[in-house]
Length: 444
Image (cartoon, rainbow, N blue to C red):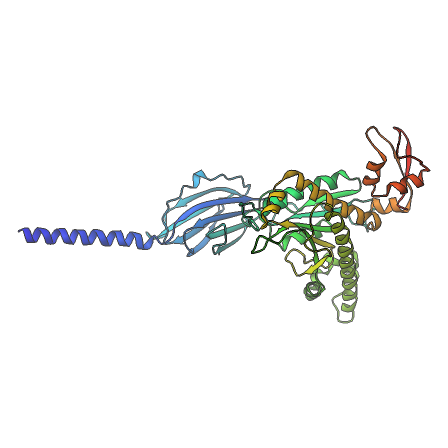
């Protein structure tokens, strides 16, 4: 009798062990977190997972839903604790799983959206992830700034690109600083300086902590008819020793590659050629004309980028040590527009402890932004785009009525001219100016 009882107990323990093993064996993965990164017309959802996800998905209508089944995963994470500020995502919740060894996640959407779902391997500071990119195809396009062919006295448009953002932190400093936060801080200060300058207008590729693909950033510059695209970054290296700022432009090899891609897609000629594309047909004997016009556009943009970067380096050298004293050419992800003058500014090495500390200092960010702005202002003062207000100023003499608090040195800085030039143009023997005095502003 006792032997029979022991056998039954052993069988019960074995059965319980098998059940426990079965439960553990299917739960190979777990949801450890969810992050929702909203931007004006897109949203990225990132599920943090303990292991590589095995998943399938499908969509449902009335109402719009995205359903994801993740294998070997329990529903142990509480989605109600996650902050959701997206205009595209209504709610994230669980639903009845297709089997006992998976979890079903439902993303309730506010409308029909374009979707892109993919897994990402661990990359510091993140582990395994399942990423869902949602895009609103009906979002209103940003207001297009008229170019020089359609108006006069227009603003010079500078598109400012704060590198990285959202799920992409960029480089991480030894104290844990994220490049994405540093670049946005400098970009916002540069935006403010540009918008305070009459005849200039700034447009940001991102205004908050969200992700924009590197290819989309120069596309935004093209939509806004940008006169210059400036991408702000912070460098990094495997050792803490390198330091200093540098300025990069599109390499000729990359420019030729990008130009070739444009030529392969003739339907996109109009994006580069404007009104000229209307008279160019897709015929063998006229393709050379498109090639010639695109070559001219590329030459102008590369020359402008190089000239502006030299001016920028000169002003950066007054604020920080330079890692490279001349403009560097490279094949970088955001420098892909052969038709738009484009510059990438590495503001310093976040991997250097001292520079990381400096880059987190508000006053230092302001000084960096001011130096980049001074470089842009110097360049466009001497070479303003056709049809711009600054081009008009260069053709005619300007005047300025002195207001309270203004000095000759302040006006020289504002108009990017030498004090001696102002004194000569106005026959001044002293640096003192009086309120109400009208000064002639000339560049020579």
